[in-house]
Image 1 (cartoon, helix red, strand yellow):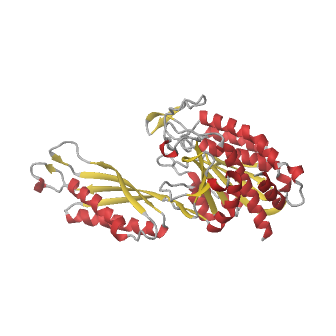
Image 2 (tube, helix red, strand yellow; image 1 turned 90 degrees about the horizontal axis):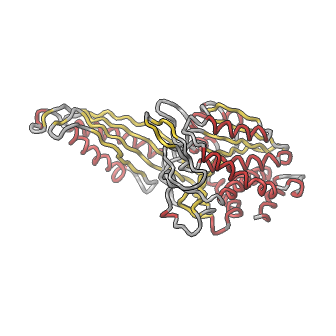
Image 3 (cartoon, one colour; image 1 turned 180 degrees about the vertical axis):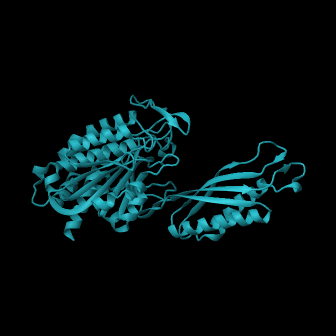
Length: 430
């Protein structure tokens, strides 16, 4: 790794000696700090749009590094801007800050004991998706790159984003709101990098994919309106339960028979059906709630139209009516092909040639997609399941037992640092 690191540094830090900049030493000095920061954040998690103390903790660090800091973006988000000593591109690096309403069940000494109110209920709060590690690794990269400030051939925008897991009801949030409030217009990044820890890979293994990586995620809500009657005489009304059953089955044909899934896969899934209060009363209405996942934005638009028309026409055929609401969520996360190819040698230098693997498409979603829609983006996964443990049996992200092997944090900090330096080097060489 040191040989590759020195090569990257020597190209990108023109007229500066490696001995003077000491990037390897900066990374070495930061490793224990990253673990310390991660443990503090893990012990003090906060939900989306409520990351007040998390933001203050990050702000203090960024200001101590001498960065230009802007707070209060998208409620609790913040950015740090590092201006390099030489002209060049601006690289955006992003970490998400929010935790989940999950009660932790790990036995680590820094386990979260935090509780809060979520949707009117008292809940535990846990960094069950690893956002604490994302923040800590980006804080580490900020410290290393700030130590190279005078030699940097470009600038770095450190984005600490709230509410990746979704904003509270009736609130905006996340990457979309940060863009809406103008961070890319103000700082004008040329490229964006992000990473996500995962229990589905062994510690230190990097998973990547060019093109569509993570699915678009959208919610739909369908209310089937019938007419209440006694269960013994269904002809006396309009049964929305039967209509709802037909809608559930009929909409499955959208993916299986109407969308070209050789282009990209798609899924329509129902997660909730609610209707009626008694066995012998046919109700007035039935409520259906589900999710749409796909990897192509044109297919996504087509599915929206077909879902609405299918639900309405099936309901009409039985004398009922359907009110269909589609709540657009995160778009497809797409990795820029050229940027992916540029990143692979760096990731292999960090993780090892055989520990950087191409992974299948991920049907989960990420609002890094908004950043990657604005500028070329590259997003990858970093394994955190300890060696010797089968990742397929490890508690998944969002589990109360989700566990991070902290030796991965050094790899993630290195990757963010070297991807930044390498992009600057390639940009300058053009």
